[in-house]
Length: 113
Length: 112
Image (cartoon, rainbow over all chains, first blue to last red; front, top):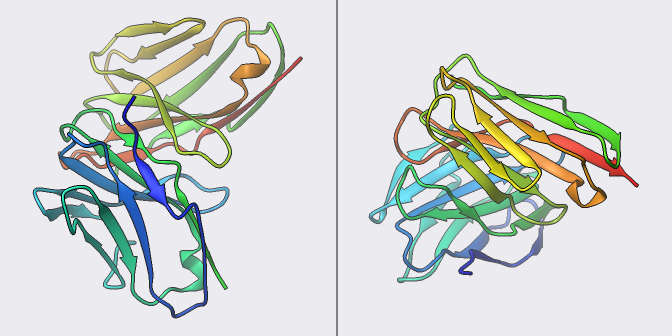
């Protein structure tokens, strides 16, 4: 069964550094998402992406965050200058249509030191 | 702001017992999804309920969507240790962009 894959599984970065989290969505899906889950808290929406542009972003997704689909397969989340509070699990998801079930990757654990 | 409240947050039961997890909101959702999440993994979709009053069964799991589409429940019959995990409900936001709003999850432990 097709799946969403994320790399790396764990990223450790110094505060203030830039990080890029990578995702390969399911190949025929058109909608792409990033979510994050701080330890012990609920899964929170960050951004949705369709037709090569952001369709919605949350308050968390400030100017330090950006997303890109650089080619036909990858979907990336960049955090420009990381803060301690960015430490979390980051999940990528994709769906065929916007109202269809989303399939999640296994996440990247981001640890900011 | 659309919110989903899950209860209970933690549940520890013996193998063979039945349990119900609730997912409630004051807002109407076009659909609700139930996921299961294992430690170190992403949420895995169990079921989507779309129609008010809908009931779906997945082996020993029964999912129900409230008539008003504001709440849902997950009932597990004769729980087994393999059912242990985090159960999440999620609904699509009203913005029609695919954004999912998650409940805080129910951690289920089934003891042999």
